[in-house]
View 1 (tube, rainbow over the protein chains, first blue to last red):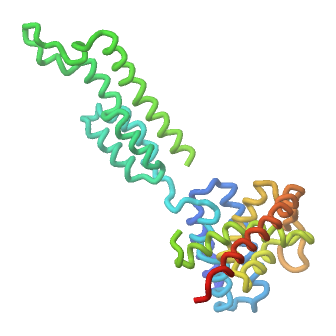
View 2 (view 1 turned 90 degrees about the vertical axis):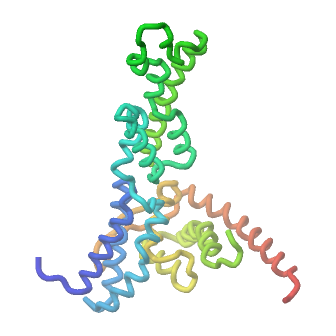
View 3 (view 1 turned 45 degrees about the vertical axis):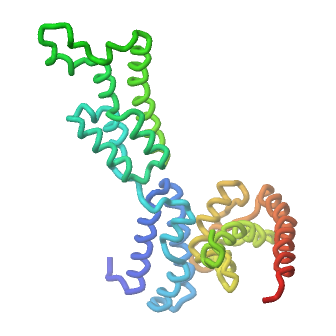
Length: 190
Length: 116
């Protein structure tokens, strides 16, 4: 490749900016807009005198701010973050990672653009700790160390009336799973 | 929307009418993007910048209101030409009386405002 003229550099820099602004679009839509705008610029340059730098600058000005074009195309200003994929999992089982895993999930959830306020509230409160709640409710590993001889080591989960206990256990199982599934579906759609 | 904020109301008005203006420009035959972009920005300012015509055209195409054909051009690379579909013609003929009604309603109210 030979050295670029200043006008060519302007055009390729503009197209790179545009491509970056469109990155949240699906590939075929992004490609189509890139193709058409490249053709538009080529068409505009054909009217100009070869490599007239000022002319090319004015032409690109008329084509407009890449962010404006991206906005018209419905591209979200913020691209999806790589960490978004972790959020449903952290909320679900992060509680088992010394509990901080769940808090990390909540932090990533609230700082992401992939979910709306309703989803964020849902992810935080249904249910805090994710599946850890199931274990706490069942009183399963927590009561082990405390059972020293006498019969006073009944955990709260088992002291509930029988049908209510079962219902709570089911909720503690199904609610976090449903929330994680919902958040993952929203993430894939955005 | 806050009255007085020129940029916002104008952007909303553009968004609501630019697509139909494109349909209207195609009424008498096919055109290519560059031409449409120039017409809509020159003077009228119906789109924010020339480049924004392409996402708009893509949307019209997805909605089946326009169709495209590639054609060789005398000078330069082949061009993608846009033309109205039957659905596009219908959308345009629905829009025209509605726009006139809207414009008259706004004008009527503006005329009633006592002069300042």
